[in-house]
Image (cartoon, rainbow, N blue to C red; front, side):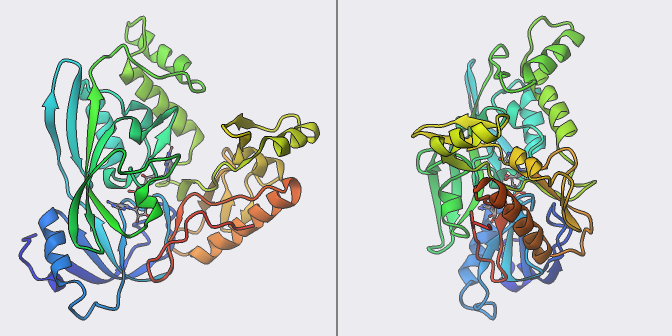
Length: 368
Ligand SMILES: Cc1cc2nc3c(=O)[nH]c(=O)nc-3n(C[C@H](O)[C@H](O)[C@H](O)COP(=O)(O)OP(=O)(O)OC[C@H]3O[C@@H](n4cnc5c(N)ncnc54)[C@H](O)[C@@H]3O)c2cc1C
């Protein structure tokens, strides 16, 4: 689209977003602006605050795999769909690339591994677009986005200015970043990565990854697993463990693993010797939320049509796609969190982003 077009031509009114979120919740947005280049954002923002849409706040949406959208979204939805992957620098040891926000994350992972550029392979099959990946510092199988990220190019919506944020500017934490802390403040348009070229360097210590990757390596006549084998292993393991949102709508892990004092964990261990927890710093323990839900007797149940998955209690699935709403999710969420609290006195917090009718966000809201 021509970037000189006036803002009214950039936006579409009354758009059905029920197919634009992997939980397949019914959602009607007042206005959607699809951005295929950065200049369009400048054009749109130059007029924002001066026209008829003044009263509407802004909300940024990418692949919709980590959001719970409201039935009515009275906001202007900005969809960053800029595409492109470019090599910025290259040596024998590493390759620096810049990836535009609209690139599909999993396709990017496969592309880089096929090029012989490594580091992202453990993050294979995470749904969504590249621009959203820094928001919760996506992580899986022992790797977090921040391990390879060099910088983020982002637009600061309140001041209408472009910024280059280094990895330390992004203030990454576990499933956390500056972008998550200040929702709807930044629009990420590009992400810079440094990837390595050493095929002997892999991280496969998590769960079954080493065994499955080694099997792939041997099938290919290799004695040692390479990053492509690790990627394939992770794809296999994830496909077995997690429901595909295209077949059964869901938004991945619904609850965060709660962090409790070590003392409380030790007390729980006496009653529940099989409780699953990982020791953390500061005398804290991270407890497996899926285990808690399963032990509360809620594997495969909830409040229809929103129920936990048969194989993975941490995942809430929607059995009435495009019809059920955020309220249905809230009911099921409360039911599950209450049951877990009653049994273990542990409060569960949701992981996906709860979007209010005006586009504002309720992160980490306690639900018990
Ligand atoms: C089956 C399944 C498995 C998953 N597994 C994992 C996993 O292993 N690890 C993990 O970390 N996550 C996982 N997720 C969660 C999710 O895929 C990631 O958080 C992903 O990065 C979200 O991308 P998205 O494009 O769908 O973002 P959206 O859901 O569209 O947006 C998520 C948040 O980011 C903001 N946002 C989106 N794009 C931008 C942008 N360009 N600039 C600024 N803000 C933006 C939105 O406003 C929203 O607050 C999983 C989800 C599913 C459904």
